[in-house]
Length: 265
Image (cartoon, rainbow, N blue to C red; front, side, top):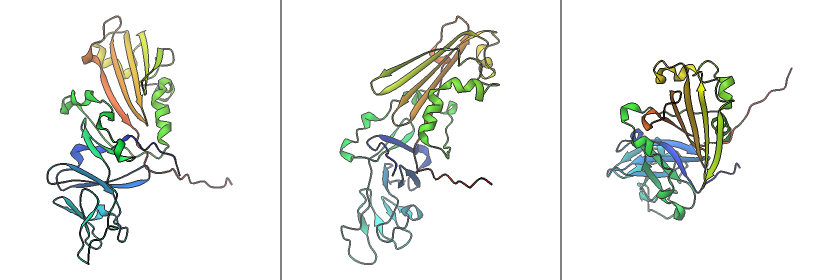
């Protein structure tokens, strides 16, 4: 069993993915999860497995504040307890685990560890998302067949861009001035390429200038949430807030990797 960090907030999706009465299935840290939005607009997070015959609750339907299993019709409320059994009495064993869930910065967050330690104040501050007009945001979910920790390694070490993305982002990262520091539980790494020949990806933002100052920053928060900040301005000009762009890379572990292999011939 892989050791996952449990007493932390994981992103399960985006808030606009689930309307009232809708549901969403996700697997996080090898736990099958069901999310659904109740009639009051609040979210519920449960283990996605009926305790009766272990069918996925996500294959059922939401009615009001209850999720009904599609196999035998048992219903479960937001607390995970059975509130409807068409076949007989409701006993305490007819229950599934529920999880603390929150919505902030357009994101659905779930806490998989000790519920007594679930503090919404520990949700990472991603206020830049709220400060960005909706029409200027893009978001998506990209399943990746790799260890999520390797993706942290990729984003935290941007020198790879000179070799992996030579025609778009490369040429400045290996020689840029870098600084790394620890701010509480957060790792911050800054790069500054001064008076450089701007890579192709930045030329549109410097309005025809031949030389540029390019700032890049990665902010890492456990277990694998990273904000990548970038700004390019004509050389020797001050950087303003409106010059900066931010990208959230939030790697969420789903399952252990199973790597197929074959004997070399």
